[in-house]
Amino acid sequence: MVSVAGPKQYPLWDMARKTMRPVGEDTQLYQVLRVDNQYLVDESRTASGRLYDACELQRDSDGSKRLIEHEAGRIAPRDCPRSATRKGRADRCWE
Picture 1 (cartoon, rainbow, N blue to C red):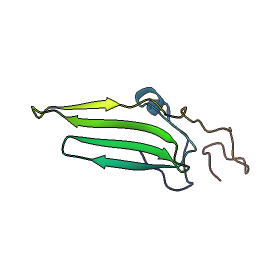
Picture 2: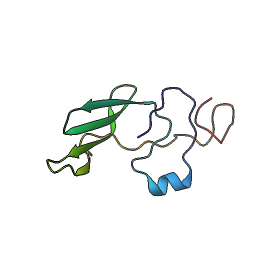
Picture 3: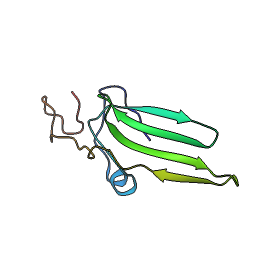
């Protein structure tokens, strides 16, 4: 999970697109964590509060752990909507 609090963001590199899901560009994110003795829920939300990514780490009664991806309710992955900024920079999404 990644949080991005400011406007300074960079385009995704090819390896990230191949190995991570979901991926996103040009989107500010924050984390919401819920913790209990048996589980930890991590939600990544946009600045407007919409769900971008979520997972849950559960501890079973025997002590084993499992990761559960939560896909319901996620918004679609976001890509940088332009090939260049207003000033002509093609290496980033922000001005």
